[in-house]
Amino acid sequence: MIISLSAIDAGGKGLQVEALVKHLRGRGVECESMHFPHYNSVTGSVFMAVLPQPRLQILLDIPVEESFRRRPQRDAAYEADRGRLEKVREHYWEYFRRLDRDRWWSVDGTWSPEDVTREIVRKVDKMMEE
Image 1 (spheres, rainbow, N blue to C red):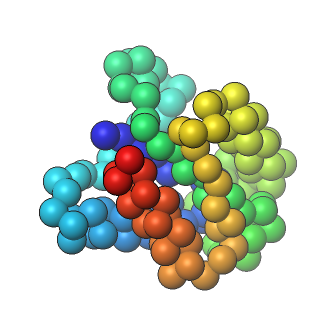
Image 2 (cartoon, one colour; image 1 turned 30 degrees about the horizontal axis):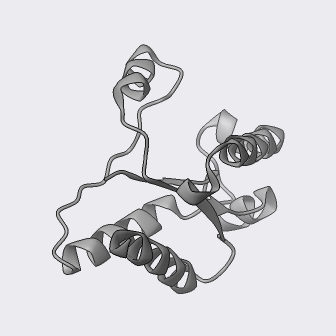
Image 3 (spheres, rainbow, N blue to C red; image 1 turned 90 degrees about the horizontal axis):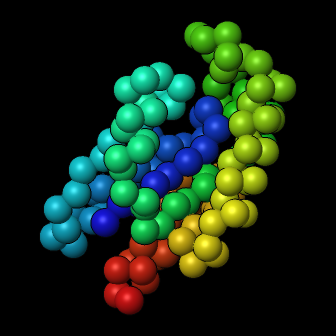
């Protein structure tokens, strides 16, 4: 089963993936985390073409201003472009709205990391029971 977590920069993906993997392993579920390659590269295109669709896709939604509050210093120019991040956030919402509602949900990424983790774990546990 594939579970996908998406967010703009500094949205909490790494922390939440780590917490979910730890939770699942604690339940005896074999799992691994993967970081996707750049989608626009040849490797990324091939990878996305052969990857099965995730059973659940979770959007960790934070405003762009929150992203910059969490990480004021940006190494890459594309990460420092607020307009670009707004477009990425809008693209995520457009993408998710086209999916079957049973296959995705969003969580308010401005909640405390612990509350976000509890919500993700609750949803994943419920899905695994079905």
